[in-house]
Structures are given as structure tokens and as C-alpha cells.
Length: 89
Image (tube, rainbow, N blue to C red; front, side, top):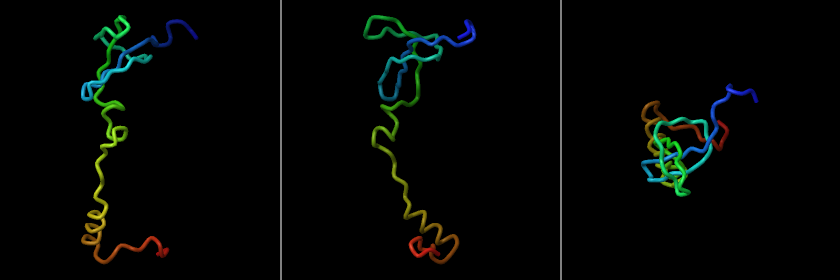
């Protein structure tokens, strides 16, 4: 690697304020804020809006889509019934 060409890759703490969760990893992300971690070291901290601790996909609290309502709305809008996918036409 050429010197002074690549960003600084160092330990950084990412903090999800919505879930009250933080994790230490390596990143090139920069921050002026710092935090003292469990190991006694001080690391830059980057606040994020969502992480695996608060994302609906990972927490299992995903909202469900009302597919039956969408079909009914389609039928009202275009009249008649939607074609049956199992009959091939």
C-alpha cells in the first residue's frame, strides 16, 4: 500500500441510540466524539440511527403487508377478478 493514500483504519465504536446498544469494530469512519470502552481505552464513537439491535428484520418485529387489501383495491380499480396464477392465464 502506498503511504498517505488510504484512510486511517482503526477501532471505532458504533452506538445505536434507539436500542441503547454499542459495539466496537474497525472502520475508516471519522468522528470528533469519543467514548471510554469497557477495556479502559478511549475510542471515537459514531452514532447510528439503526443497527441489528433495532432493525425490524433482525428483531422479528417487522410490519406485515396487507396483501388481501391490495388485491381488493386492484379489483375495485380495474374491475373484474385478478387472473388465477395457477391456471397459466
